[in-house]
Image (cartoon, rainbow, N blue to C red; front, side, top):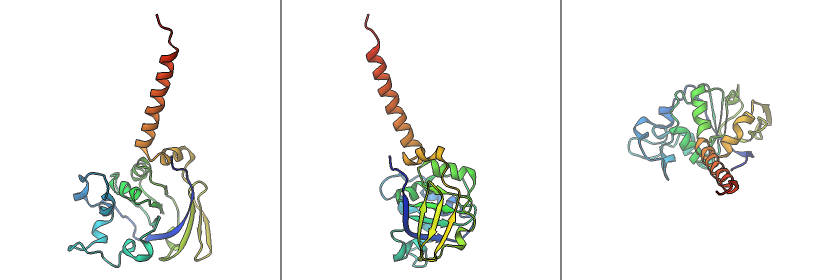
Length: 194
């Protein structure tokens, strides 16, 4: 289990509203195996040109954001329930702060273990390229150290933290299965023999 921590890192602001899951991971990559390198498909058509070269003006291609751990986005991020983009974001160790997102997209993001805070109204207006930010996912405290701005946003609900800490649905189910099996084995040990 990876416990929640305060993250202080450069944020990668993506100001556009209505970023859909086909922008996050283009549909032609959806059948690719989710293994090492899957994160290379993240924002593929925005990150790379037709020749495969990186587009220098895309925020995640900037030297300053190679180690970004937080994507800051506008309204309606991930406008469909496909989880592949969130899988790639999670594989890169990214978290997400956005002004809003559809419920099904939120459910898909939580289901893969993505650290996410939605309903961060005005977040794109207080975070610029190059800003050093700090986010506490447990409390919802956001600090932009570069601009000396502090805001309180809705934190990740306590009921979802364990699921996210365990890496999403798969991690939770693995733990549940292991607990179930060990409880079953212990119960078998207490059954009297005939």
